[in-house]
Length: 163
Image (cartoon, rainbow, N blue to C red; front, side):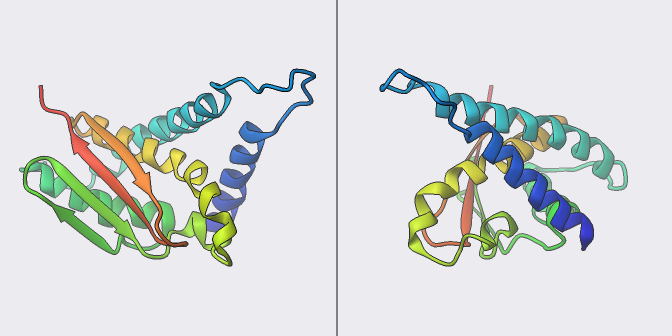
């Protein structure tokens, strides 16, 4: 339990540090600043996902299908990171998956009002990278995005990139 709280605080501080606004005399902020912060968070998550994918997959048998890999994410990876399983996994059987968490731990603290809804995406970038990094380690190239309709629920969209 203490590990989860420490991770939440660390994640919150990473987001806050990357979004900290330095005093700038220029009234027009650089348009790439927020995108750069999202990229940095995704990159950190990607690397953590790679490491977790290597460590956690050692204990399992080889995956036969990509659906088995996504189930691994929803169960084993999510339990390792957030001490709970993902609530829902859906697919169109054409390489697109929707993973839903109805009480995402990194959004629970801000779920008190709608005013935080527009702030939610920056708290999901690390996790998008985490999922993408884990999938990469398991041999699946993917694109992961996230959406939030109502706090603290969120949905991660995984699109498998075929080559």
